[in-house]
Structure formats: C-alpha cells, structure tokens
Image (cartoon, rainbow, N blue to C red; front, top):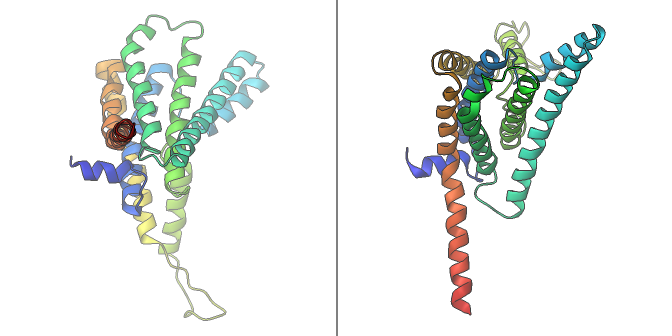
Length: 259
C-alpha cells in the first residue's frame, strides 16, 4: 500500500474521501471486535443502548452487581472517548502529523495485548474476569468512535448502527417521497442525499462484514482473531507516527548543529 495513501488516510490533513475510507475500515474493525467480543463474554460492547437498558433491568430486578458491571462498561466507553479526544487535541496543539494516528496506534496496541493474553482468560472465566474484559472492550470502542467522530465532525460513526440505520430509513423515505408540486418559495421539494445514502449503506455493510469475520475468526482461532485487526490498525497509523519521529530526529540534529 503506497505511503502517500496511508499518510492521507490517517494524517492531519483531511479530505472527505479519506474520511469515508477510514470510516469504512474502522466500521469493519468495530463489527469484528463487537461480534468476537460477544462470543468471548456473551455481551456486545460497541453500543451503549443495550448497556443502559440492561442496567435498568438489573436494578429493577435487584441484581445490583450486574447493574454495577454495566455502569463500569458505560464509564469505560466514556473514558475511552475522552482519552482519544485528549490524544487528538494534544497532537493538534503540537502540530503533529499523528494527531489522529496516535489514538489508533493505542487501540492497535491494546487489541494486540488482548489477543496475546486472551487465551489465559478462558482459564479464568469466574470472578471479575468477564466484567473487566467487557470494560476493556468498551474502552476500545469509545476510543475508536471518538476518533472518527472528531475527524468527520460527527458525520461518521463506526461502533453502533442504530443512528446509521435510522438515517438510511430517512433517506429512503426521501427517495420514495412524491413531490406533488413544483419547487417554489412556498413549497420546498424533498430530495434524497444519494451520496449520503450510499455512505450509510456502505458503513452498515462494513460493520456487518466485520461482524461476520470477527465471529468466524473467534470461532476458529479464538482470541488470536484480534491480531489481524491490530495489524490493520498499525498499518493505518504507522506512517504519520513515523513522520513525527523523523521530524523530531531532524529537529534535534539541527539543534545539536547550532551548538
């Protein structure tokens, strides 16, 4: 894959096309992580709607420990999003090429660690292992969702499909709406945003394909299925990170030359 393509995909200089391509890739990763995580801990971790609902149900039924576990998952998602935002703003204020790539690299590192130690988790399914694993995965999902949200100014989401599927329905409703009158100052015709509809369908499809890949991967190779996902994220993030390292080395060399 050409270096200039990777630099454009996750570098600080953004284009609408790069945002779409990165969003589709991250939607695939989110779907795979979410589906694989469900097979690991019997809980989806990419969206908070179910978490909040389960918290309410468990409180109503008097299952306080389960409600607290849900609260921990919710808090972890929020912390992940906050951590991602801190990384992006820190890099932005220092004019780094990797302001978006750095949190992606952090996600890759955490996924890599999860894949490497995951086999040991199967031996300790009791106690706090499952709730902690859920919190870990929720942190990853919050981190990733914040990255693409910041990059696209909240136009693209990758970790949950409720809003995306709703928007697909809205645009389809516009497609099939019959404008009974011509455009006028008193009557604004309804027109579907076909480019937006295409992107939404592609995001939902990428998430679904990722879910299928993650489920099959976990079924056949277990926690090691996260390793290719981590490798994909490293590939996406590495060029801007190396650009910053090269800039730092050159700057230090110039400073030593002035002494």
